[in-house]
Length: 356
Ligand code: PLP
Ligand code: COI
Image (tube, rainbow, N blue to C red; front, side):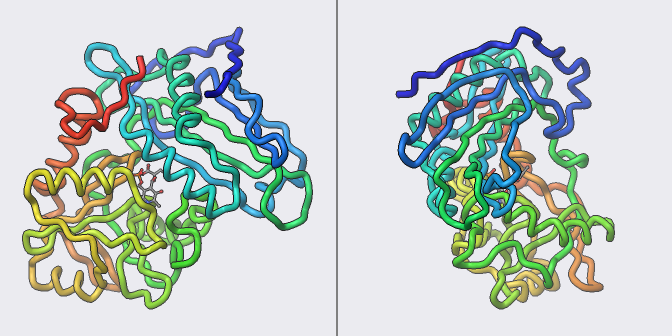
């Protein structure tokens, strides 16, 4: 159990006046959580302090060698004013796996949960009230050795910052256009794809930029070995409804195991819908597009929840999915997940963790 030191701000900021203009990750709250780590001491000085810039040695490991991992989850305000989290233990566990991959220290699930919920309680007034808004929580962990040597770190900093957010995509729940990327890859098997580390995102920006320049929102990633199998869409997991069955790429090591992905699969199965986690080739997807058996396609992740794909482009071919409209399964997943998250629907799965 952590003995968390709490130092409240003496200069609280004004809360956002217009919640319809929140966007994503632009405003930050009054406090942040920190825990230091050292190889000899282990985790020490857990604290919640006023939000402030970091002061860092310019040789700090994370600035040079990408020793950084992060998480992303949300706190939701229910109609009766309570604040709750959605499957936060899944994020704690994924962070343990990311730490292991990047040779960063592992913060226990209990400690992660304790400092996270303590911070959310302190920032409760920052959880926005409007429909579709939430407080995005960003735990992250950085290597902080002050040396240019390349090795597993001896010092690290765990931190959580919070940001009141609206929708991630400017399109909201409207279908987005996606470009299939066959040059750059996001991650490779044996690499860091299953870990949520900053380097994966840095490596994906070039293809993302290219897609944007061509008028698409994001890219559909193919596997790094053969450029044959579908992996993810932008920074989300991807699902397709083909001929009545929901197909999502199997977790082969280069794909991030999303909490939303897992929840969609559990939800679909609970409704008796066929779901298959398997390799899905681009060839099979193209065939489904040509034969008219691709019924729906969507991305899923914490930030956007579910994001329908209305258009898929590959080389000079453009395919419109479900007349460019959100399909019934995509809509059901969005309504059910957001219904549970905002406390409008019952939570038969026990996914919700009440905070205050
Ligand atoms: N894939 C990538 C690369 C991501 O960054 C994310 C977002 O966190 C996801 C998938 C979806 O994961 P989750 O549903 O846990 O947010
Ligand atoms: C998600 O939550 O779906 C994300 O991809 C987070 C993103 C801002 C990195």
